Length: 187
Image 1 (cartoon, rainbow, N blue to C red):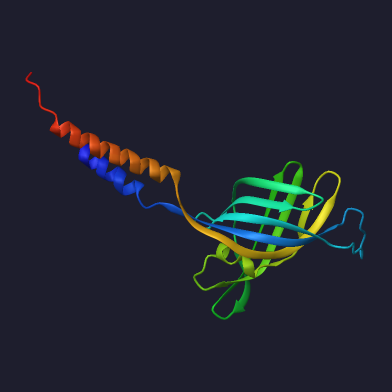
Image 2 (image 1 turned 120 degrees about the vertical axis):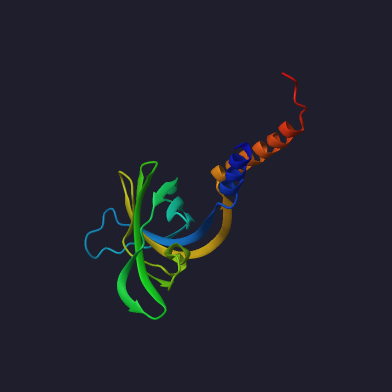
């Protein structure tokens, strides 16, 4: 029984990993707080990034930095990309949107009509996104922003739970070997 449990822990604990992608983000933004219809203030520049777990379809971190604001959200937000119904050769046009809040800021992003090859994971193709309706607001100001994603760091990261199970399985297997080598004491 001891060997069976050790083997199962080794089997379950081994191969689990997550695919992480970081997208760098360069954007232009305008303060639309005091704008009525037809207002077009001069744009300013900002930078940011998104960190995604493509296996779980989750947003793990979002940063947006400029002279006017600094957002550094982290957590776990499920993203649900959906097909827009446009027919294109060898793929789909997809969209996704999300809202996050950080330090008094609310960020809403709508990533629209980005091309995803057939059988591809939409989160692997944000560099193809055409953005619309991205807003950032706090209690005093509202900004509209849009920009361009560049695929940055791509990594396979081991899940912590699988590492723990692997270590426990190795420990149990080692203890089983030690136990078999100990002499049996007479009763």
